[in-house]
Length: 190
Image 1 (cartoon, one colour):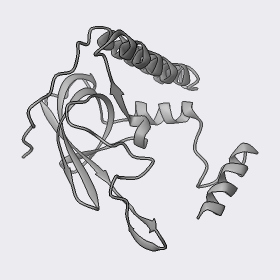
Image 2 (image 1 turned 180 degrees about the vertical axis):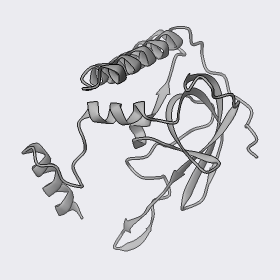
Image 3 (image 1 turned 60 degrees about the vertical axis):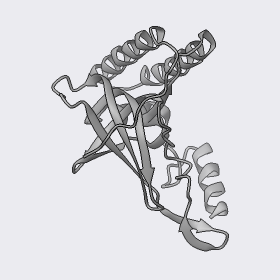
Image 4 (image 1 turned 90 degrees about the vertical axis):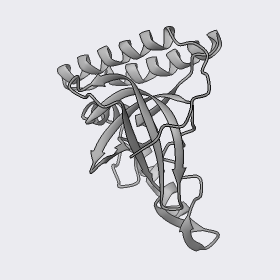
């Protein structure tokens, strides 16, 4: 497996696209723009088993679509089987490409609807933790959002590029007004 990953990395550095090579960041930003729900949320109760991790998200601010009226959503993060110590199993802490939600976090999420639940678009790139407790945390979070914004500025479609720029500006404005995070009570999911 490591040899395949090394080969994929080598080929991607040479400009050859393979199933193992990651798309450029601006393509990831274009995929995120197509999400069914883009929102700033607060993570409530997190639970799961070895196959799926679920988190209850309380919606703080909906960025897209404006017609979404829900107050909470259930996020499902699959944990695909993988080889661990020479045998097939699942990694108990998720996979490297998927986020690890923690209760009480404020996050920017790009979600795709799957039945009654939602999944994250583009793995960790679609789940961005927003920290605003101190000036340093706010500055670091804004810097991270600005990096995503720079990637989005390279999207070929002008309408999508403008939409993502406006979205990231709203997130930066939100982070500037954030206060220190306080613990939250678990959100019940139905």
